[in-house]
Image 1 (cartoon, rainbow, N blue to C red):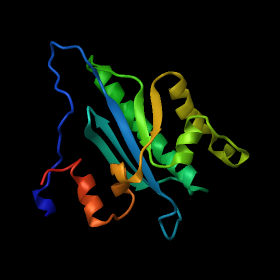
Image 2: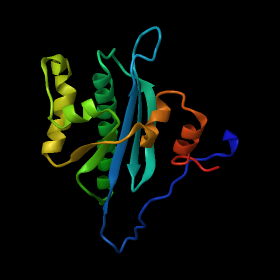
Image 3: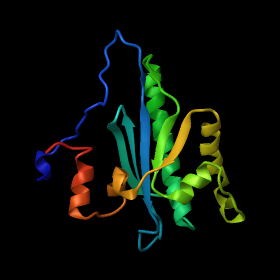
Length: 177
């Protein structure tokens, strides 16, 4: 019953003001391509974690129609990275440090390979700006992109309806009850 659920915060590490640690930020993104039957726009789902606890989660329609699943997943990943950078700035603004590189997990191997610079073709040149945004952060040592299975990607629940067992598994990362 959802009325008994609440946002669940349980950091992986404890911090006190005497110990100087660098806090960990990572994100997970997913997309469901052309899921809107009228506009054919994709849905992005993203989650940003601070010390293993979700601190930002969002679901929303992408601004433009994607021409491929890889493009749709890349746009979701870029949105997640922007949220990760926001959390990083907030944490740094209060004098705390962030462990770099932050990690973005994506469940689409083509998008991961494209972001890591392992593949590029003429068919992806329309995606230049988002790809170079991510690659620049990688070169600066701010970001690392890794593949994660769809079963382990909690952001999947923000893009589509899931089977009950998978929904409950992912929901335990966010909510009590």
